[in-house]
Image 1 (cartoon, rainbow, N blue to C red):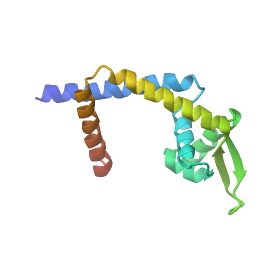
Image 2: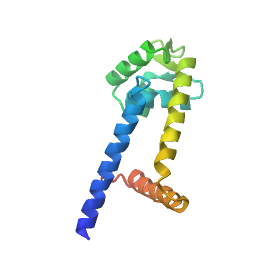
Image 3: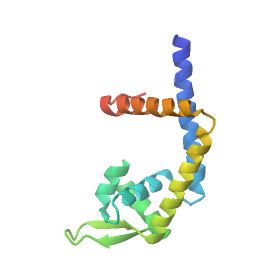
Length: 148
């Protein structure tokens, strides 16, 4: 039983590593890093609204200094724009540009195709069970604050 749990632990680590490597390769085609992608996603969820740098840092689990560098690189690529915050002269707002919205949509479409390709190796019953199991595991980790 212990050997099986150890093997399961290693399989989970290998799966996470393989998924991260695949996603990093996919993002690299767009010249993006994972933190940059998370930033674009946060801005995308804002539905056209600009966000403060501090809010972006919090949403993406980045430090303020890291977020500045991330936004600088996205700005260089024309994916975001900075605006003064009319409510606070000391704050800067960040918003997606039309190009940023387009790139985000393309990356999301690529992710959907990659997941579909991966899940083709499972039957429909296995996919349904996998989806349910992942939901339970995520809920246990997120609610209980457990670390693996």
